[in-house]
Image (cartoon, rainbow, N blue to C red):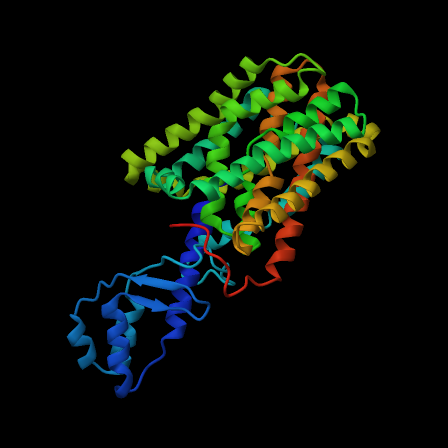
Length: 419
């Protein structure tokens, strides 16, 4: 799903482009100088307080623009290449339309924003027709998850990691929320509800997993900071090689034997290696990756749906008999993570950043938790909480995103992210 972030980020830029284009109407002669001054200066303020940096590729010099008619002036401006850089709020408000995107990208964006629908359909198929999705067993499941990590790496560059260094506090708080608040919640809920050892271990394991790629989509819908969301998902994914096995060992080791070394190796193979390969390919072979990236979003949508449906299908019998016992702990886990992530962030950050951190804290890679449970725990019940989490995470995250989408970001919202 992370491969979709390229389409989402592009639609943000196009939305800002539309705002600029619509804000500049044909001007009379007396106002031509003002328009020319804005283009020459290289900046323009939008109504919501953001600013745009403009890099013009007009064939005629600035002086020639002033000499043309208003119609020609606007025609040339429409062909000006806009480099959008919101200095007050990187994400701004998500555009209401994808004007300027080609039809393929519009389809991908639509399929992506309907992610919760595909999860629900996948869950229904998994429960009532498990044979349709259970063919995606451990080896194929590993390949599918590895491809999603690779697709995320293909959207990243070395500059993205330099941006993390420029925003250590903002990204760091998201990292701590993912690996401090969520694991402690999983442990406390498992102990308070007195879950059996396998189910408690599974709940703790899924709470120790890194941020899920679907969080980028939910952040986009909620008018959060998409660029920050992608960076937080990347950092928590890379950190998973240490944090997931370490925290699982510390919190669940007293319940069942935990192979921390095996968890670390599997996480390294499935998460870190594909991500690094994708980053290096994007950095050193940009022409090649630009062609691949046009295909990966559609594959990502299909794979993500299968990776959500397959866990449900593989534990369908358990869900039918013990579903009510399992759903409550998982719902509490995600709901508390969303709430704590938001309100703790509000202490230091603005609305947009707080929404982003809340979604990152509440949505994690449940598919990775399911895979690790299958490979490194003998009791099949350990994998069940991760399967339930796939559905609860998608529904809870999307519901929260839609709620926030209908609540505008304040115009004086704090800028917590340095682009």
